[in-house]
Amino acid sequence: MDLYKAIQDLYAEKEKLERVIVSLEELQRTAGAVPVLSRGGKRRGRKSMNAAERQEVSERMKKYWASRRKEKQPPGRS
Image (tube, helix red, strand yellow):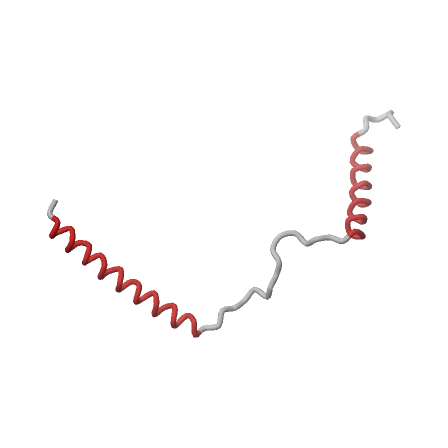
C-alpha cells in the first residue's frame, strides 16, 4: 500500500469535509435569521381524564356491552 497516496486521499477527503461543514454552517446562520414556528405547546398522545369523565365513559361502555350481549343472545332465551 502506498502511504503517500493514502495520505493524499485523506487530505482530499478532509478538504471536501471542510467545504461541506462551511456550507452547512452558512445554511445554519441564514436559517437562524428566520423565526422557527412553534407548535404552540400541544401535547401528544391521549388526553388525561378526571374521575367524572372516567365514570361517564364507564357507564357508557357498560350500556354498550349490555346491548351487545342482548343482541348476541339466541332467540327464545330471555
